[in-house]
Image 1 (cartoon, rainbow, N blue to C red):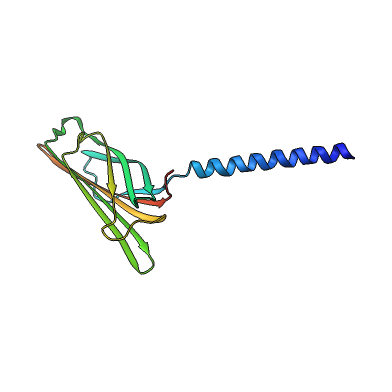
Image 2: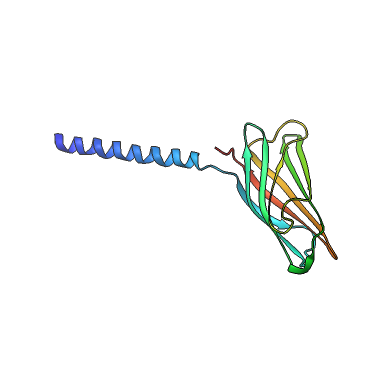
Length: 155
């Protein structure tokens, strides 16, 4: 009887440790989730915007969006602009932020942009983000994507 009680204790202890590890690893690996990415502007076929990650810094209240732009090879980009917008409903008010980047390092390649709220700060929870890409060479092209995300503080 005593041996059975000891086995139960060890099993309970082992199960408790496994649960504790599962919970702590889930908290450590927490990151913002992208629920949906929607292309809003007509896609002329000259460029495509891909969103990779959305991260949220609780200490700063800032949102960082990373991704890449694919351009047709002969676009000959001479001018480029990236715009990042963030909106979040908080009760009756809307928190909004905006950042614009001219001449980023790789107009047809990867990008990263950080949005801070104009007033207040972004909070954990749902947010709607927009990335606008505008490139010009012999031809001009633009694409706007909407990102519906859940902001989770990065660790």
